Amino acid sequence: MRGRFVVTAAVVALAAAPLAACSDSSVMHMRVGQCILLPEDKSATTATTIDKTSCTREHDAEVFALASAPDGDFPGAEALNRQAETECISAFDAYVGSDYLTSSLDATWMIPTKDSWAQNDRSIVCLARPLDHSKLTSSVKESGL
Image 1: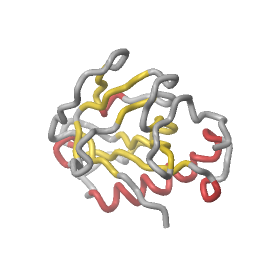
Image 2 (image 1 turned 180 degrees about the horizontal axis):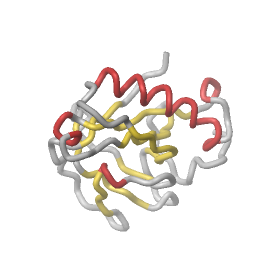
Image 3 (image 1 turned 30 degrees about the vertical axis):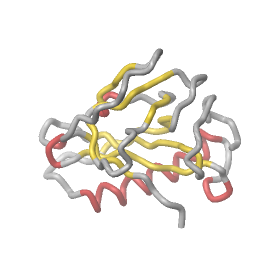
Image 4 (image 1 turned 90 degrees about the vertical axis):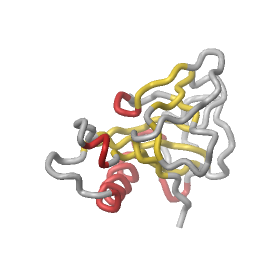
C-alpha cells in the first residue's frame, strides 16, 4: 500500500516563507492544474492556505481533480478520506496518463475539516506527487509518469 499524505483543509494557518513567483491560495479555492508547495512542517495536518507556484518551478504536488462531498452534517474525516481515495484514484489515470498502480506518482488529497465544513467547504482536492517525495519541475498532466 502506498503512503498517503492527507491534509485536512482549514483550521490553522501554516506559516510558510514567501518565495519568488509564489502566492497563497485558499485551500477552498484550488483548481485543477495548479501546482503547489506543501507545508514545510510535516507534522501539520491542517492548512488554510497553500503556496501555489508555476508548474515550471520546483513544486511538491499538482492538483489533478476536485470532488465535492455531499451536503448535510459533517461526515467525519474517515468518511471523507474514503470518498477522497475513491474519487482521486479513479481520476488519476485520465489526468496523468498512466495507471495509478504502476505510476511513479502517488495520489493524495486535502479534505474539509469540521470547522471549514461549517463555512460550506465541500471540496476534496486531489494531488499528484512523486512517490519518493522529490520535487517536480513540470506539470504531471498527460506526463505518463
